[in-house]
Length: 155
Image (cartoon, rainbow, N blue to C red; front, side, top):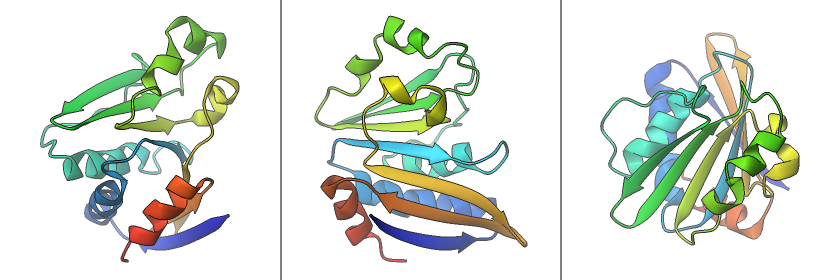
């Protein structure tokens, strides 16, 4: 498994990192797991990723709806937040597999451990931890597609 870590200080740095990561993810079918405690910046990172696709509006965590779709000219991004998922079986009822089927789909999944048995293997796992004054973001590749993304990151 290939990994890289980046220390980020402040919300702007998290968004900027998301933009860089999002540019490396474009034109690929990817599943990205976002891991970290409450308030670590998973949604803030997602905002940066979405900005790299051209999204300029607010990005809210889809805590109650479970998924927020974003359509772009040549791509689809699904932002999942499974924090309030009561039973992983709910994912099967909502047709979770359909979200991961398209060839130009990026799926960002917050709290993946809540539904892991119904989710495909993550191409990238992003873990966010607190450090003094900011966050440490570790990006790990689980697949060759994920390794390709890491190879494009210039930090």
